[in-house]
Each structure stands twice: as C-alpha cells, then as structure tokens.
Image (cartoon, rainbow, N blue to C red):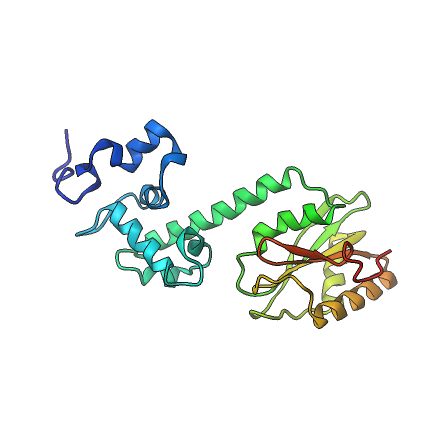
Length: 241
C-alpha cells in the first residue's frame, strides 16, 4: 500500500524511475549517480517545498560559497556550518559529517594496505588523506619498532593555520611510553605548500639531537601539503643516520 502523498508533485517519487537516485543506483550502479544524486541518497528525504534531490543541490550550492566547493566542502564544514543551510538540522548535519569522515578513513585504509614505512612517499601517501584537509597544523609522531613496524601514530600538537608548537621533550616522553626504537615526524601545512619553514628546520634539528641522546632515532620529517609532500630525508635537508 502506498504511503499517503508519496507521489505528490515535487517529491522524488513523482520523478520518472530513471531520474530517481535509488532506482538509478540499482539499475546502473553508484558510478552513474551525480554528486547531487549521491548526496540525495544520504539525505534520504526532503523538506516542505524541496525533495531530497533539491535539498542536496542546496547543500552543494552552500559549499560553493566556501573555499572548498562541491563535495570537498563536506570535509571542511563543521556541524554548525551545515546547520546554517536551510533544511539541514542537527541530525542531517551529523550524517553529512560522518560521510566526510568515512571517505577519509576509506582512502587511508586503501593506502595502508601497501604502506612501506621505509619509503617516504608511501608514508606521505597514507598521512596525506588524514592531513591534507585539515585547516590547522597537526604534528603526528609515527612510532616504529626495531623492524620498522608501526606502534602508534598519536597527534601530539594542533596549532593555528600556520603553526603548531611542540617540544622534543613532549615527543620523546610519548616515544618512551610506546617503547619506540625510532620515529618519523609528520605534519601538515594547511596552505597546501609543503615547503618547510625555518621553524620546521629548527624543530627537526632539535628532535634529531635529542633522539641521539635517548637512543630513539629520528628517521624522517615529512611535511604534507595538498596532494604533495616534502621529505627531509629525500631532499637531504638534514643529515639523518
């Protein structure tokens, strides 16, 4: 039995079957759906005066008014930002935030399967999906055992849009807690430009020197930009042992 008003004008059910996101997905697969249609499937239902497709278009248009247009904007928008969009309440905002987080975790999971911790490009590829969308600088310390197996990857510092503060003492207190044999520093530049700053160079030198004293070697310092990175070891910016 049909639900009351499910085929009323303006609803998704009133559209031809080939234009309905669910039916189109079943018939042709997810790749056949546009960004608007994919988002409409997640949103599920519309509001008064807007069906799910129209509400999805409203969300995408709202992202177009940010520095990160389109679906990319969902990775940067806060719950508060999303709730400012007409028709998006707290529940829908949380759903959209979770979609963004899922996409990041899926990307990271795929990269991790072929991760080689001795290869700076491989390490950068893994952390790029974690960090390239961040709007503040994050410093991650990758802890490794004697066979270069990962033991942990805590975020030890979150800073502003152009700086994150941390001391060698904080880094090695955590490394000792993990019983790490060596470490790799990874941090992002929200500007998208991975070229290291003077502070990056100074921090690397101080951490390397401190590591030699406590017997925990710094293997590399990798700076993540937008789809690009700089490895201190690859660029020979510092004499690693």
